[in-house]
Length: 86
Image (cartoon, rainbow, N blue to C red; front, side, top):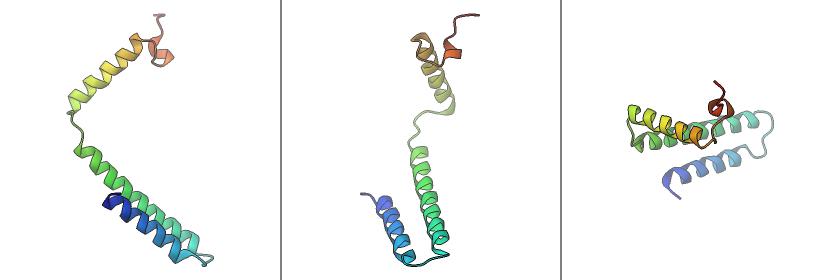
């Protein structure tokens, strides 16, 4: 378990522990804390993915077009892309 996972799990456990036994506002506090944790996870994940994008924009576009044409030729793409009736 890395630091981000342990941080997130500690926040979730703390959220449940502090709101246990409370009634009216506890649901909203818990939702607020869970939303905060979700934003944190999203931020960490997005930063991680941006760091490991090896292809530049033009290369990504070419790659996606190559994958799309491959699926069209193999007839595994969506029906409107593989329709031979022109």
